[in-house]
Structure formats: structure tokens, C-alpha cells
Amino acid sequence: MTAAAGTDRSTGVIQPTFTGRHWWRDAVIYQVYVRSFLDSTGDGIGDLAGVRAGLPYLRKLGVDGIWLSPFYPSPQHDHGYDVAAYQDVDPLFGDLAEFDLLMSAARRLGIKVLLDIVPNHCSVEHHWFRDALAAAPGSPERARFHFAAGRGPDGAEPPNNWHAMFGGSAWTRVTEPDGTPGEWYLHMFTPEQPDWNWRNPEVPAEFEGVLRFWLDRGVDGFRIDVAAGLYKHPDLPDSDDPDVDARTRDSVNPLAWNQPEVHDVWRHWRTVCDEYAARDGRERLLVGEVSVPTAREHALYVRPDELHQAFFFDLLGAPWDADAFRKVISEAMEDIAGTGSTVTWVLNNHDQVRTVTRYGGPSTEGSGLGAARARAAALLMLALPGAAYIYQGEELGLPEVVDLPDDQITDPIFRRTGSRARIRDGCRVPLPWSGQASPFGFTSGAAGARPWLPQPDYFAEYATDRALADTRSFWHLYRDGLQLRAALPQLGEGVLRWLDRQPGVLAFERGDGLVCAVNFSTAPVPAPVSGTPLLSSGPCPAGVLPGSTAAWWLSDQ
Ligand code: GLC
Image 1 (cartoon, protein in one colour):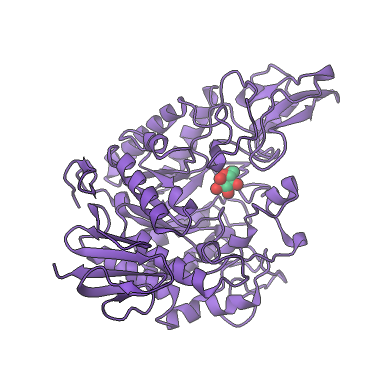
Image 2: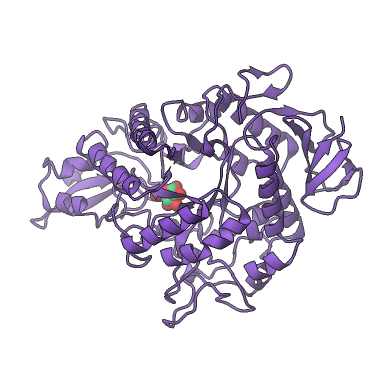
């Protein structure tokens, strides 16, 4: 698909400046949270062989690729985002031979595979961090991390006032090898996740080796964890207001995130990916988890020689309101269009309350309203120009599990803050595949184990076997949307033109005559276009767009 150059704000037409065909520009990628997808060993935890077994299901759904959450050796303090070894598989999830089998199976089915790479921090069990603890202050081993002397009497106060993202100080004091209280090390997440010092050339060199290791094993690219992180202000000064309530999680402390040097890393990683693509013609993809305060800053990460994509989280953060959605969509498209990239849309991931519950309120099973809105939002997202990411279970309409007992919660945020407010276990409950009772086919439980998080009884209604058999299910909506997206030249990359609309309704035309409209209100409105109905998120009588519903038409005009 190609697009003409230019953005014309006066006509409301937004079109990218880039021309050319690159698979990732309008790809739909499915996020596999490995420990909750499918368990092949009966230990209650999903694994790589489970992912391989699930590939035909994903082929049927029609996604272009998968992103695998971290499966590397890890003590699992943050479910794998605390990496102890970057070039191996944790026995919990399989081994390198199983990874290779997964890669070949995905290749046979035409499914691309992205890995999750975690360059901002590692695990306290990484051998370089162990070396650092065993070495002296000022040693080369410590210089790979941020070690610093404390302040106050006997250095008993942290080196600065920064707060960790998951609660508490961003610093932890170590005991020196001789048993005395010693230096402090920086960790922007949990104390088990020490931050790398990217100003030390050994660190970028090490990560280049990691990239090449997995590229040599055939992966199609990487999702980059905390991609606005890595570099800290060189002086590690106090923050004026460490509690500043910024709009996005990762931009809380501007001294610790979004430093200019990080862009050099993405430029270098891009050259590595391009080198592989030049060798075999297969383009590799870098998609960053970039949480920065504005769409404009976000766009800097996807300049033509940096990341291919960066998740655009403002859609996910927008309240259920037509004006709010229009604003974030317009801003994203205007800012990204000039870079040559496409917008990367996201409604759900493993860190966020699932849409059914987010849009419907905190009822246990997700109210009917939440489900209707989540379905409408899905059709909206699949009609927007650019790429889209679907989080496992989203295609089943799974609600957030909001009533996990305290003693079953595993998210380190709960331990660190003592509050359930931001915990992420509710969207990570293992998928239901079949049957009437837990474990719903997720695990055989052969080893006597239950799913690592308890599945509620009502998951029976969402099991994949039921979803596939019921043409009114979320699954069929996503599958039909993906099929149309693949078949219709108007969808995917290209032009979006806003249409005049009634209050509470968002309507736009894609390419030549494909119209998508969403009714954010609860009352029906006249359909904004006359034409052939293609797909709707709920029952849609001729000439009407019911409340909390989205629809696609081919316009007669
Ligand atoms: C990212 C991940 C999240 C993880 C954090 C620390 O935000 O999405 O799950 O806890 O980074 O690695």
C-alpha cells in the first residue's frame, strides 16, 4: 500500500508521507503472555511448547505475528522482566531447542515472532550484578550499574530522592563483601531489577550481542521494554518533585527517563536490524514501549532511522468519549505522519485493566455495557491507519479479574505499595480454552498444580471452544475484522478523513468509501452513511447505529 505525501489539517485528511510496502506498517500483532497462554507440562504455568500448540488457533484468528513476553532465565520477581541471562530460556518455559521448534512452526504458518527485550534493567541474579556485589566500590564491575555512596551520617540516606515506579525509593543499599553497610544501587522498578549504566560502553556492546543472538535464531524483531529509559541524567541529581503526577507512568521523573542519548541506541539497533534485512530480505521490526508526556515527543522515537514503531498508549488511556477519542487519534496521526512511521494502536496489554472492565465499571464479570463498548473499540482500532496490537484474551472479551484474594496476588506492585490500586494480576489470569471448570484446558494439572493465578468460574463462558462455536462471540468479531482488514485495500495503512458527525458519534472514511462510525452514547442514532454494511460490533438494523456500537460500511456515495 502506498500513500501520497502531506498532511492537510484544513480538510481533516491525514495521510502519511512515506511511500512503500513494509509488513510491519499495518501488521496486527498478538501479545502472548507466555505464563498465562497454555501450559504443556502440567505445572500450572504456560510455556513455549504451549505457545507452539496454540499457533494454529492464532493462524485461524488471522494475526500477522506474535510478541512473546520474556521467557529468559529469571527469578520471576517481575514475571520475567527481571532477566538473569539474556541468551537462554528459563526451564520454567522450556529450552532453546523448544524455542527453535516454536520458530519453525511459526514460520511454517506464516506468523512472525517478536521477542521482548529488557535493556533498562536486569535481575539481581545476572552474573554481572553478582560480580558487582562481590567487587569494590569504584571497580569496573560496579561501573556497569549505577552504584553511588549514600548521603547523610554514615551514608545511610539514598544518593538522591528518586522514587521507584513500583513504590519506595529507587535505591537499595548493599552490604559490602567485608560485611559493612556500603554503597547504594539504582533500580527504577523493584530492588530485584538493578538498572544498567548505559554510559558504560560494555553495556551497549553486550546488548548488541543479545540482539544478534536472537536474530541469528530467526526472530522477526523485538518489543523493547521501557524504551524511553536506559539513560539517566549523568549527575543523578535530586528531582524537584519526585512525586509529580505525570500523565504517563514512565515519565514520572524526567531525570530518569527520555534522555536524549537514548535515541543513539535506537539508531544503532536499527542499523543492526537493517543489516539482517539486507542479508536475507526479511525486514526486522523494533517496537518500543515508549511512555513520554506528549505525542510529539513520542514521534521522535519513530524517526526514519530509529524504532519502526512505538506503542501509542493515549488511545488506551482515553475515557469512553467521542471527543476524547477523536483528539488522541488526530494528535497521534498528525505527529507520527511526519516521521514516516505509522501509528501503533493498543487497547490492552499485560499491564492494564482489560477494556471490558475499564469501559464498563468494576463489576466482576464486566457489565454488558463494558462488553459492548470493548467490541466497538476493537472495530474502531482495526479500522484506524497503522498497526495494532491485541493482548491475549482480548479476542475472547475476557474481563479483568478484580477479586483475586490478597494472598494470591503476585504483582510486586502490591508488595511494594501495599495497595491493590495498580496491580496487574487481574489481566494476567491464565486463558480458558475449554470445559466448564478451572483449569479450563489451560493445564492438565498433571503435576498436581493449579493455574498460577486462580481462574474464576465465569471464565467458562469465555473459553475458546465456546467462542469459536458462537458466531456472536468476540472471537468472531475480531476474526471477521481481521479478515476484512486483510481483504480491503482501504484498511491498514493509508488515508483517514473525518466525517461530519452527530454529538457522541465518531465517524471517518478510509480510502475510497470505507466508513467506520462509533456511537459512544447509549441511544441509537441514524447511520451516518448509506451503503453496504460490512461488519458491526452488535446488532445494527438498517439505517441505524445503536448505542455503544461501531460499524463498517462501504458507502454508496
Ligand atoms: C514494562 C513492562 C512491565 C514491567 C516493567 C518493568 O512496563 O510492560 O510489565 O513490569 O516494564 O520491566
